[in-house]
Length: 398
Image 1 (cartoon, helix red, strand yellow):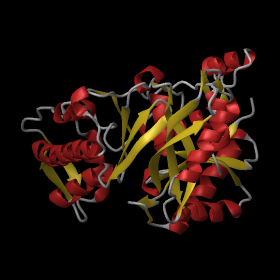
Image 2 (cartoon, helix red, strand yellow):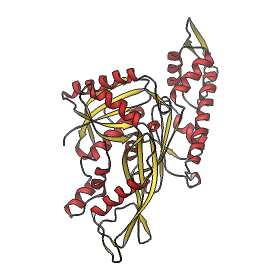
Image 3 (cartoon, one colour):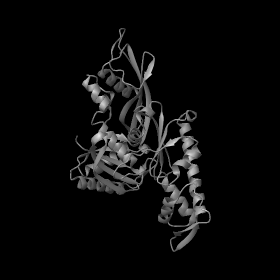
Image 4 (cartoon, helix red, strand yellow):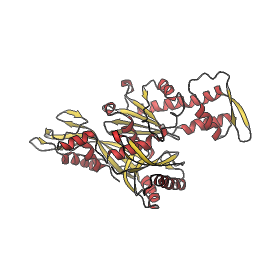
């Protein structure tokens, strides 16, 4: 199958992956480009020129490694630039029941798009059914070939800020590259990391990045809630740098060496200041980092409650991102602080096998999935039954 390129904009880096479907539904990455970039914070650009240079750099690196000319990319949209809105819709077939067809699902979704109130200054990127309601029965499965008088659905609409689209478009125009589709960064991650059977009821993905923590709730294939917290790995290093009066680089290295819940005793380590080096007690480093991690756990729990996640039902929660997962013992620390079961399941990859690349791989997984039907979709096609996946392709827009 034809390879696909994805461009992932993170809060501290830009990644371009060029790959295709391998055997057994694996992903073969032919080209990679990675560049550091302080790109955005809380939905605002930090350095547009730096972003411009980083995007061009990573696309060219991926092209050189794969020995191809990339002419279009699937683009991830950070949570900070996104908004999700849910809407109910019903269409009736009249007095007599009839068989639901593919065109009816398309009409249902397009009618929901016309009904929903679009946020000012935002562009619709996709609409996905959360569930269908037929004769009083709710299901995430498509009701195609079901006989009924009417069908209803809850539809999830994801919007992106026009400013984001315009900024990226201007950059890509400089190198004659076009968009193929927009992908919510958390959407691709959630579909890749959380097994389908665990998304039957709402599941949660928490991505702790460098400058912020993103949270999404997913049900079936649809995102039903999105949120961001302005705390990430950067704040851990910043606290150490300020509290210990050492350089940011030295604080970052100390953060990466740190192990949660480890009894350091009287051990010390040497950290660099602006003018010299100083000896610092590991217990002091632990105090600063664990205080910030506890605050992050409190903020996550508060945000989950604000998003109406029923924590007493102990929902499936997955953790990704490089802001904290790359610190040893962090998963267990957050489990204890949140009092919730949390999983980490980054698929193994021969390259970039690290949780801080989950978003990029999730986008590639998503883009390739929408180019090649799954085995279930292929089976349905053989039987003459169109899959919901193929129908939804029309509703993932540029």
